Length: 146
Image (tube, rainbow, N blue to C red; front, side, top):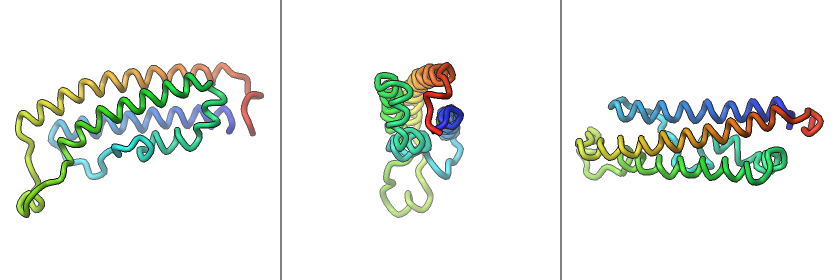
């Protein structure tokens, strides 16, 4: 993979993650989200870019930095799974399935608390992404495959 391709991919991971955070903010504001974020870290857009290219990223970034990226991505998904469970849990009964279920204030407060944890996880993920971007930018083009 070329240097610019790797930089573009990391920037796409950041943009995708930012879009996922916007979706969650919309949920908290009571807006409908038609395509919720995937709970599985491998299925989300960031995971689809990061994990198939794991070997190349590990070789260029070093295993330790790649593992930090993976850990932060995983922690974010763990926090997100709590919010996903509140908003998208299986609805019981015919009327709930037909008309949906409004969250009660306790559930919404819990989701907002989890969101605060997600913000922290996001900042940590962005921090590691920034380190990865700086490291790749500093490397000579000769380190990359054509």
